[in-house]
Image 1 (cartoon, one colour):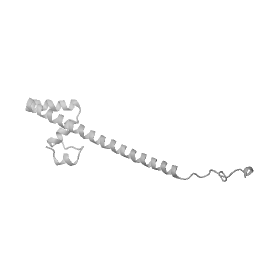
Image 2 (tube, helix red, strand yellow):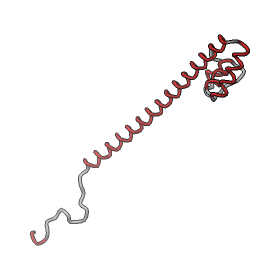
Image 3 (cartoon, helix red, strand yellow):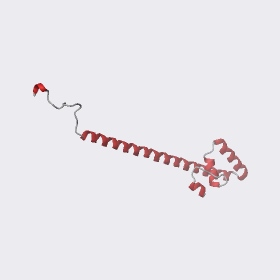
Image 4 (cartoon, helix red, strand yellow):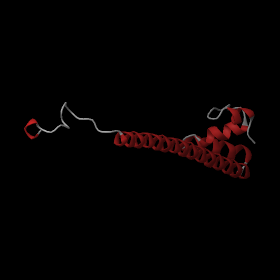
Length: 116
């Protein structure tokens, strides 16, 4: 079960709530997790430890999936921006190719005087 704080303020935690403690524990270094696991094993037994580990693994997988989804969204945004820029550049090139060419200097399209 996720608390209201977890649901609305992703990335923050309140160590007093069970779901927030799991979130904190899932992101903690291995030595910090092991210290909590040892306390739970000594206080509540192996069954409670196994349940906690399963919950922490599930939370860690949820965090990985969330990060992957955010990375994919950012990648898609970059691709879309690149497509828009490419389309704008292609349109500009087509417009340049459709314009009539203008002479570079006066008299460029006139025959030389000796042939006139």
